[in-house]
Image (cartoon, rainbow, N blue to C red):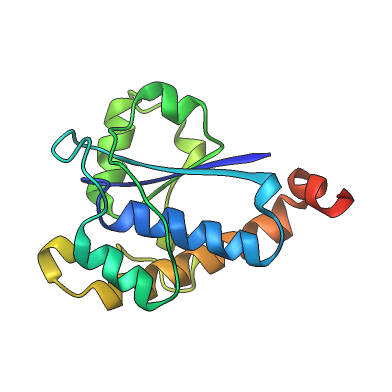
Length: 161
């Protein structure tokens, strides 16, 4: 099983969008038993809140349903995941600071798996939830392709059942 955590600032827009998008992708490929997918915030500002309504609306427009309650990332969460996929450079800095610079081998910007590495803009500020959605889809597709090519031995459970 591959454990994946998506991380953004508040865990009410980008990271829960990524969590639900990725869950749908792996379900469509019948790989859901090979992954544990979660999402977290680098801050405690939104802890306990649900997905921001415009983000939820954008997901629904693309046929993606799901609920989520924001929670802050801990060092234990980093340790318990194989990949910690952050949305932007500030998130990367915050996670590395949380871990004291350790475990960098498992911490990546989501868009680093694409042909165009960049930050996923925060729609809380840009108000462009569709652009954020498209970037996250691109990043999740590229990351899943990476897993299927480079870590195929870790998803053998779904192939056997």
